Amino acid sequence: MSQATLFSIDLNEITFCILDVETTGLNPALGDRICEIALLKSRNGHALDTYHTLVNPGRPISPSASAVNNISDAMVRNSPSFEDVAGDILSFMADTVLVGHNTQFDMSFLHAQLKALNLALPSYSVLDTLALARRHYKFASNSLGNVARAIGLEPENQHRALGDVLITKRIFDCFLKDFRNRGFATLEALLQLQGGSVAYPRRHDVVIPQILEDALKNRRRLLVKYVSAAASVSQRLIDPIEVNTLGDNLYLIGYCHKARDRRTFRLDRIIEMRAENRDE
Image (cartoon, rainbow, N blue to C red):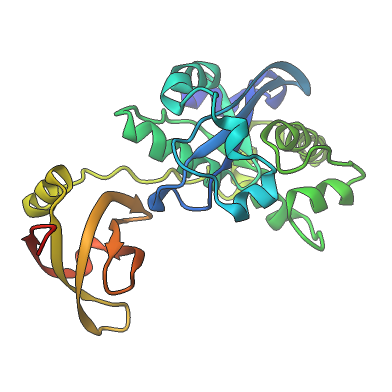
């Protein structure tokens, strides 16, 4: 179905896919990864199908993330990797309109991990119950749990992917009923109410300097001059780990010997770099 046709048909005829991910941390550009994903297809208020799995992220779950989602490293140790389930996820979401609560967060992780597999996140219309709550209601708080309780719903198994998907569906159903009663009955009208579809994370045609590419490949150390946001210039000795994106910028993630810790450097603020051997 074309986007033009989809925009004009009645909301009751659209298949929505409600999604939620739980993660090892808050930032995919800093190496955080999905450790649980849940998807639920719904049409005219009826749940059609669900997909849910824990995911082995290939890295430890941060203590702060685990304290929120109650997912431990032991729980995901024998779970499939994202690469194992990426095809199932894309197949499940096909020909749907995506819905979530703070959908930009979920989309940023899906985008980053699909991109790492040389897969693209297809073009979807994306709705966000958080954006709709902020624009059209006056809840004391727009968090998922507080919005649910404000409209008489009790969230269960909160901060786990499937529990959050189930309560997001119920909130979305309530919003749809309210908007229909106000005369908004098509996807086009709903997107206008939201202020447009949720923006996709931008894909970059990543051009990495050859010296950095070689350093990543051959585990070479880099001596760089870096300009901070405050315009101060410092010299840093870095063991590069990876290059990633956040918003419109490319970042080098590496171990900084000056800070004696892992640090992130905006690539366009590195004004000079020189390769050094690890034993230097």
